[in-house]
Amino acid sequence: MLTAYGYIAIFLVIAIGFGIVPLIISLRERQTRPDPVKLSTYECGVETIGPTWVQFRVGFYLYALVFVIFDVETVFLYPWAVAYGKLGLYALVEMFVFVLLLAVGLAYAWRKRALVWK
Amino acid sequence: MNDPIIAIAFFVLAAVLLISALAVVMLRNIVHSALFLALAFVSVAGFYILLNAEFLAAVQILIYAGAVMILLLFAIMLTQRANTPMSNVSNSQAGLAAIVAAAVFVVLAFVLSKTSWLTGAAAVTQPNTEVLGKALFDYYVLPFEIASVLLLVAMIGAIVIARED
Image (tube, rainbow over all chains, first blue to last red):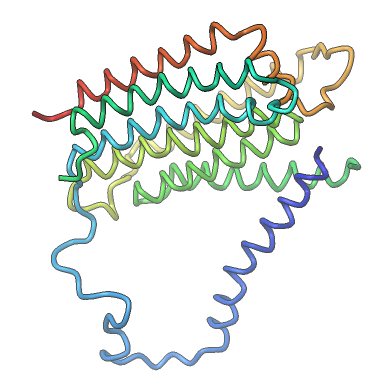
């Protein structure tokens, strides 16, 4: 089992290197002659108005809470999916009941307009 | 899988965990601290994988690096004031805290070295997620379904409390 995670470790090393190595190469090889035009915001952005670290509306906390509930649901889905081949119809019905109960919660959130992007 | 590779993995994970935990405490921007806390959670998940507890590792990533971090980041973003880059300020008691932390370390190291660790008859070598799944959907069906009712109650309660109207 650990051998399979070894591939993930190799993947991680390559992924981190993929991000960092070009940065290091460009840092070593580039010439630095900045002027105001070069340092200005261009292409992928506009000049910001006011500070960029702002306080967000408290209403967004609802999205976080709903996400956390469904994240916990995923914890139960995971062993179900792994053992699915050995489980049979009964487990499928159980999981449908489980998801249905949480869908009731989602429907409630929907109905109470908790998901409306104001 | 032979031992030296596991040892290397352990020490790499330990280094990542310690560095990110230090970064959580020492970085000035509290958003960066939160992101390094996520990295610390992920490296703890790596330890769980080394201990053959892959389900625990998945839960660690899903719940701690996922849900807990989301709640933390939202709490930061919803409450932050103008000066975020200097939001995680240290105070004058850092030296005192270092002494207390060192004392706790000494006590823990002493206890850990004195304890005789009882181990089970056999090491966990099987992937345990499947065993867990079978137990959960066979013997522990009722707690499993009650868990969904609990989640439903939590969600409705959260909506009732947090909704503004």
